[in-house]
Length: 294
Image (cartoon, rainbow, N blue to C red):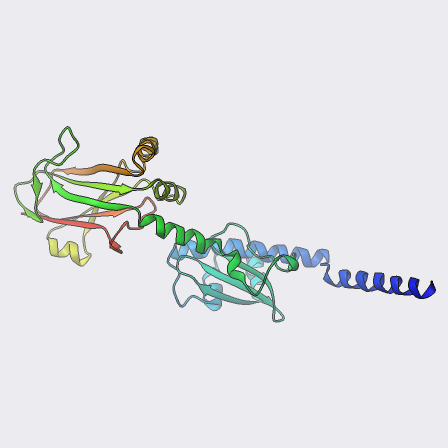
């Protein structure tokens, strides 16, 4: 009986000692909370600097240099106390933070909160498979997939639009005697593409009108932006109509256009953009339409 009680007592002591070692003091919790805040605050600064184009050579050293004068000093010092490892992943990055060689926190930059507060809940995470917690990758893959469902089936320069929403006189890449100019197009897509693009803040789609004195200057990238015009595709008051069309046909086929009056001679270019300024792609290249008015 005494031997049994001794064994039980020994187990209790071991468990108590083990839990005491794992428990964080209030001071440690405070420091760790400061580190978490530094990570989330810093990610906003990195995104503000690079948007969704994180450089391939972005690393821990460059991370610290970028945020040094952009975050509170106590946040910066909290980061400096640790070893940082940054892995660029296209539109976002993975941040690993180590203390004495042990991973204490990881974070994928697209999420508003820290993804892996390892020190607080070590048993919760599979540190050998961090990709399991990469929701950024899933969102990016899904978005690219949905973007590919948007198709510009037709696009023409025209003098105007008739009552059937079709182009009137169609202009070639070079024209003359033009006083107003329309770019008309048909955009096809599926419901899921519509939902994802809307949730990502990419709607409505825009026509960015650009002008230069010659078409070659437009192509060379030295033009003057004139106007950014929201198309009906993706406007909040039109989404219900698009969804109704999708429900009936399984997809939407939307005729849309923008126009400019008082057209002067020179090179005109329209870029098709999402609301966040990123380009709509046509065969993996930005959708752009140029015409020279003589």
